[in-house]
Image (cartoon, rainbow, N blue to C red; front, side, top):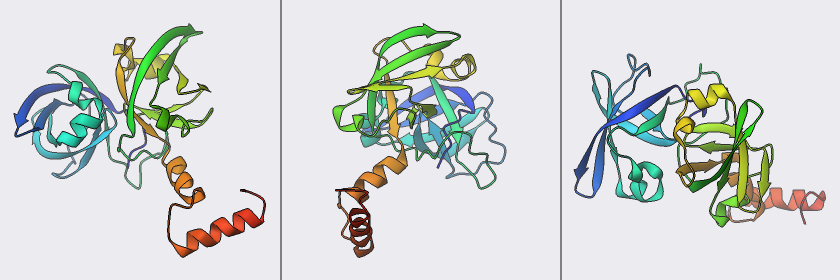
Length: 217
């Protein structure tokens, strides 16, 4: 699990093709890796990757064909900047929201506009993800925890303050940039519960109780 608070901007140092998969070597810049172990999870643009090797200035991770197809990691090139965050620990401040590192789909930047000292970024998402995104709810974009300011159809806007823009790869976005989207994990589980997709008896009893109490119809 992660918090969605980016700890460093790294760069892709090397991309090695390995039988349909890819091995990435990353320069992690200011990310503190002194106490990290093999097998630790590190989020790269919001994608949870496993460190299989450490270098003098970063780490190495394998990326499966599935991940390359479903996330923006397949678009990375040597030198590409990436958002980095180490996994959440029990003594980590939860400054953002609970982020799993499992990307739900790709979004696309469709407009940029000044809004005071902030910049309003508007993204479109696949129609199947739109109903998970709620005004004033949480969303993760390339690993960054953000508050949704408005929603219209399958588009939503977020305001990026100067600190966030200066310390994440938002500073590099251009129109049509594709980004990794992870919706709020609570919304996903709540939908599964309320649509009765689980066969667990306890869930069915809860649905019955909610219905009898007038919370759902």
